[in-house]
Amino acid sequence: MSKFISRKLIATSLAIAVVVAADLLGAPMDASTLDAITNMLLGLVGAQGLVDTAGAWRAGQAVIGTVEAAKDLAVVDEPTD
Image 1: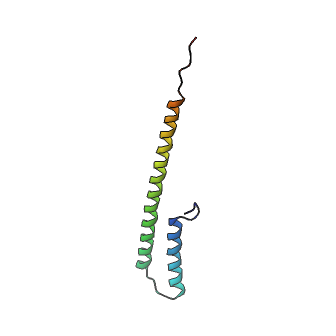
Image 2: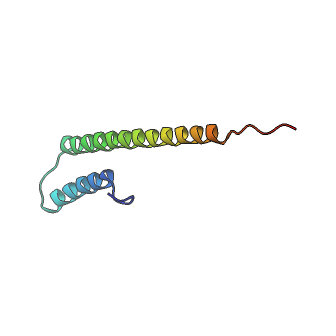
Image 3: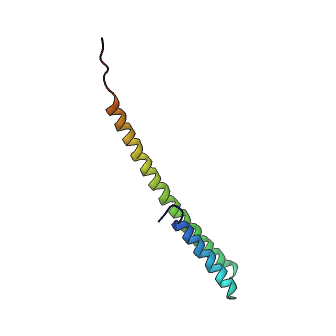
């Protein structure tokens, strides 16, 4: 998926669409149903956020490893006179 379309955005949009469609069709949605939809959505978005954070952490650790390896290669003994 691209940077601008994430699973979090799609899930949020679908939840909003379900609530709006139910309201327009006249389907009664009580507070407990809306709470259930909200809780499921927040759980999904939170879990996906954790997955994204873990991926960013791993990428950062890889960059740190590469930089440290480059530093080790760049250290050259300077000739003494």
